[in-house]
Image (cartoon, rainbow, N blue to C red):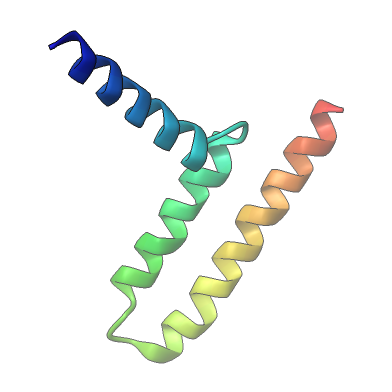
Length: 70
């Protein structure tokens, strides 16, 4: 039983480190962009404008936050 718990914990930590890593704001931003894409999937013109704009905003916000840290 102890082996299963250790493997499950290691599996969860791997995915946390892989998806979130050092920048949780990028992970949250990616979830927002995917959510916008999901909500606007029936309105192609709206999706074509909102999804790239939201991705650019997330990347710019992350860049500004990264520059403030250093």
